[in-house]
Image (cartoon, rainbow, N blue to C red; front, side, top):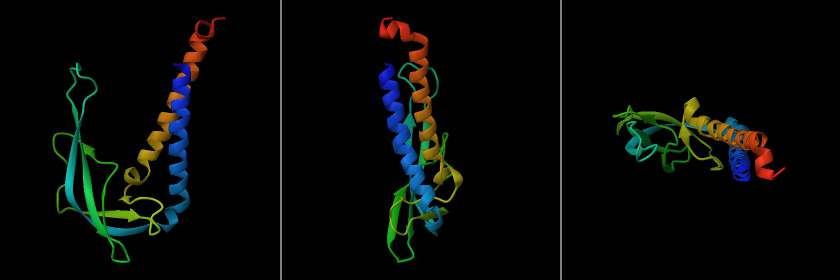
Length: 146
């Protein structure tokens, strides 16, 4: 269990930190464009099948925009909103940012759209690593048989 937590934490932290660094090194090159919501994809998240909590419904906008070169690009945002209905609607205009070289995918021009997925993944990686270390510290004698 300790090894699984530690390896999971290291893996998530490595991948997310690499992506965060990629964004940080390229963000000055990002360009802005006006996008239009063409669809809102909803996904129901259930914590467990026996949970008495109501399932959470997440809504992710699918946005299309044109680059400076005139290329049409459509993407689904990594961030959205939750609740019974969405604040996004087809035809709604949103500002997006994109990397003209295509190294980083397009995203909504908000702090959460640009940074939240990577920051959350870095935090998750650290939490998994800390969990593994905490398990090793608390139960090390039993795990290692000393």
